[in-house]
Image (cartoon, rainbow, N blue to C red; front, side):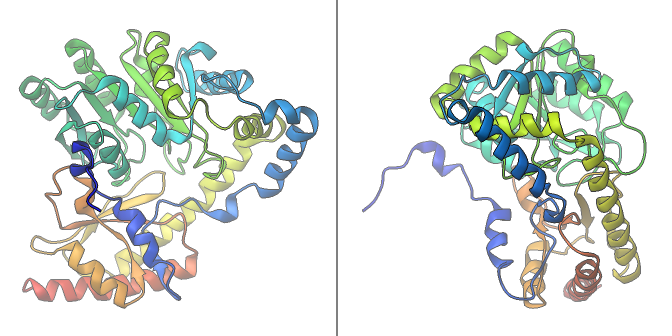
Length: 397
């Protein structure tokens, strides 16, 4: 049967990462593709204790329907977390979502009409592209350098395109690993305020800094209610508990609540209460410290292996935290073609073109270091370097 799909489906594309993850099921495949946290860091025993306590002490309530805004004590904890980051925030400023991905969908649903312009970094998070595409947004990418989004390029794009939203990932950006410099955060906020543009500040990795000094979020500057700040427990506790949150002005949150009621009524009540109990009963900061240490070691090793093995002409970013780095190949190299050769050598990565809304750039690729053991990093980068040398031969390198 030929199904009459909606017009918006014609603009949407599948997640390249999800497609590539199917390949990682092959034996001996080393994956630098998925944005997966290290499973050995999941607090399995602690989560089991929390689940047992929640069900033992408030089982009927935990298994019942709940309010859309989220579990009150957990909203208070997330508000306190925001305050610790320098953001003026109370529980009324928090909406709990089913992961931060749902937050992106709700924001797009509430704020975007077909044809509205969304400004993004170049490159940007591919699942955000998917979320905004589903509401028929128009994308304009804004240039980045080693310090993040370039304010002069942003101002030019704002004047030319009259955007509805600016979407940014300030800390250890996915896919590049770049952190937006503090002075640029102020310049970008001032531009958005002047032109009355909503900033969607996506910060799933901000707690995963393993070197350098923490930088306050853009939301900490916001006195006018133009910033919607998104985060999640997926990278600091576990992605299996689908709990994220949006912090913003209560007036805008009320619209997000209505949109969420149409989507899923509320985030899993049981998941929320387990997260709340975990944050109350265990030392979450000490746990995050262990994650930072592990990721710092794995990044340093991957950087060392790249330096020793990759041929001349390739370069990569040097993040201070997070889970990714971004490799740039010489002009003429197609990372998509490299991936096919890499799969033959049992190593995979994500080609960069899917991180650009117009799929315009083919010579970059993303590497994830958080979910690979030290041995797999050594072996995998050796295999990747072989592919990189072959790719240079193809362009006369």
